[in-house]
Image (tube, rainbow, N blue to C red; front, side, top):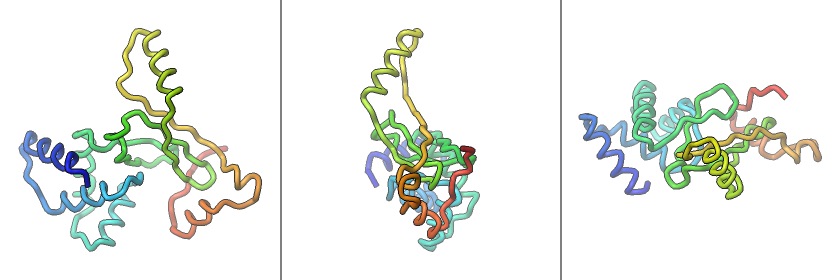
Length: 166
């Protein structure tokens, strides 16, 4: 985990008058050991696999704390579940393409979108602070080939699939 993340969190915890806990540290380490998006249940499963003693309530309290500290963001990927994204620190303006067939999430940045965002906000008398876009798309491989390796892997892993209307 990046030392800057730990430093920001420690400073935030001190300002809130909270104390450091081993459970919170385990949760933070697991979140920032990967750049994957996750739901609270997926995070809890990862914690259990690492033999952590953290409770589900501790997971939820820590997620709320990390959101408040602006270290992670809640995002809506169109599946009706709260998903968390730990990738906003390095890239505050990034976007998500969500496959409505297999649930794969692809993060992307585009300078054209940044320019458009700047033009629109200035024209309307605002200054952009951050931007996030979600594009829902269908899998080209599934449509053309009749199968999608990402869909197969999602089903093998028991991963949640989108609950989107086409």
